[in-house]
Length: 444
Image (cartoon, rainbow, N blue to C red; front, side, top):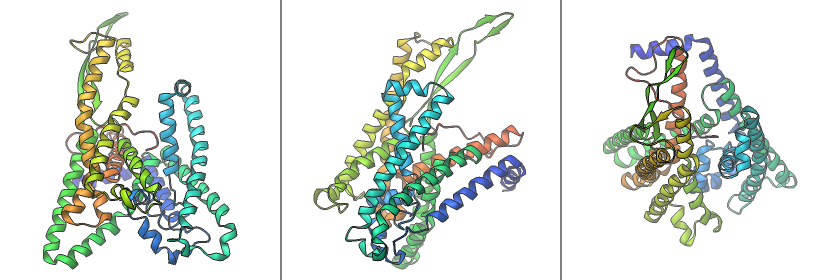
């Protein structure tokens, strides 16, 4: 405990790090305030139906990502999600379209072009989503929250405000990334998810005390122990790598001998990150669109994450998208060419195409268990809700996208703090070993 307090003191004693933390917390606080400001023309006292309808399915996931702003009809109801969608689309285009890939390879100028196009696409995506959100607000279930006297201006004002709100959140994320601590977009998503944790925990606590008495405390304790175990396992999955040994040939440059070192090529078990879960949930959300978000008939299987049909289809989608997305972002041929250019080789494997085939085979082998574990994490909320009959809000923290994003963002932020401490000759955050780095997908 004393070492931990000393570490906190060291963190606060570094002026640059202290300013970064303060700046980040200030912008996150501004974001949270904005999520409570209701759209003009909405009566906040009549949003009970919106709260109920946005508590499950894909709408519940969206509401979790924006910290409850969606169900509050806030000016930041769409949050950072349109920007995330635009970023994912642009990322895929840079992989699939040769002209886009060429622009991305232009260095800093190419990166600025891609970012500018992403912003333009964000405005378009936000406008369409804002129009859909207005239709959702005007549905019979939520129409009573609309103020009749504001009806003539509601459509245009809401589209403009929601679009500006998303651009404002995007700007906050960029400022946090530039002058704050960590990835701004990821931190905004994480703070929205964490904002629901106290309420969900309180509801689960009240339910256990009311239903089970003293036995409820024991069940609550078991649930917390399971949650800690899942987080520890998820950390291992996020940071898990297969180290492929690489040797570098010796070279004589002038009077100096270069190379001859032995290194490792780290291949991540979960190279696709959270993207397969997001894609799978988006696919399963499509049937509910054609049934008006009600989940009637066969669509009900895709809105209830405790349903066995949902779990099976969801798992298959996650595994398939894991292999697909890994194939898109991972290029063994490029890695083999880089090794060859730097006089590196894998012991026992010929340079060139044999090296690419060898790396690709290893990646396929480690991707399968990673995909299965990722699918298991995705269905854990439904399993725990059935096993412990816990509330849906609290069960979402036992796996799925929410927990994966939180663990990943926290690890990245701790890694940046660790780097700042070590650069200034301080001990790191951890007593034994150091927090290993990981790459964050663009926009996440």
